[in-house]
Image (cartoon, rainbow, N blue to C red; front, side, top):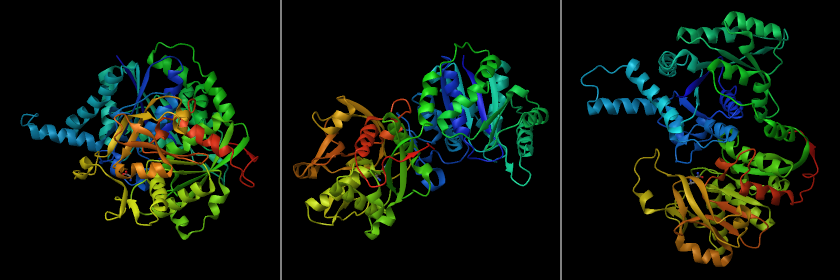
Length: 543
Ligand code: GLN
């Protein structure tokens, strides 16, 4: 039987509740406890797949093709697990399921209510993730903050879980924020007290309070929170802003959270083993050589939109004993023809995206990379852009495009497969999830991976158009990875270039701090060799 930890948030959002949940998973897994994680998102969308990156940040794709919250990325990277659709539940999914049952007549004439029907469906999904994974411990993070209207059914469901599963099998952890008032030079606990009161109003008394703060938390502040919130003193755990997110598990471990959870839940645990992680964090915090990478996208104002890409670059740089400095380049600014900013970078990355806005700037970046022989890594849209750019010079025409951007283009080098042409509904209908990819022997791509077949995660509607395969190959754009039956081009690389490789999938989702993705690792390796005036030999501390 699984035990459960429920992580709620108070005061404000964006204080790192997801990273806290992932870190809790890490310190328990380090004691050989099997762990899985689930995120409950109170919004009414069925999944974030159709949401704008400005609203939601990155959409993280699981191996089974679920489009999920970016917190699942933290869970996978910290804990080293691979999650599934069952790990992200939204109000939209819960209500759709309950209403479908009602339409089928499953409730035999009953009145359908939030309690018990909606809450039962939420609890069923929490238990389902426990069953599917067989994990000893399930960490469930409730999105949003306590007091949100949409979040109430979730809080009611997790309240009931303590009664259903037994007191000793459920633990509530509340993550709050202690604001710092400069005028009086102090941290304030009042918002935490209010937030805990709000949680109690829902019938939940937290067992542990994690206090996020930008300043040291004094023993006096801990005492105060312990007294007013009725939480043991050792269960008030400060979580002071750290240099790198990967340090958070160590801060929690050193504050005694691991031992506390094990004893409160009566878990069978081994001695914790975090020494490799400690080395990794120490390495991250050591100043080192810098590699400057230009990330050319259209959501660069909001870096959460490229969360996994940023992390994958950081992991890859670490493997080369260097630090990555990302220049966030708005692709629309490159459309004016001014490529000055690109001259300062040692490598160019064009990540995923949708819609025509900003595309021509990405094409300009791919052209710059090709002509100036700057290492280039294209991710999904980044591969489509690389193909468009290359084909424009092969066909001596600007009328080369993806049919996503120009349905009537003379050279539709990127287009929809017949099955995608039938699609009428936007949500959940792209090519999603893991597909096998056969690497072409002798290519740089095959060398980077060092294997014959790889499994990578997709999220796109459009594909390389095979009509142009032969011509482009003869001109030097080599298909270096193919779907196992060879029908679809999954990776392309450029001949006569130090390193220009792009893939139709999203390798960033599989990178981990302790096992960087081969394409990112080799891209950084190539970028390191690019000499750019003033960019190398700079030392700095890592963020
Ligand atoms: N818009 C492109 C497509 O749908 C690329 C998608 C992406 O980059 N994830 O195929």
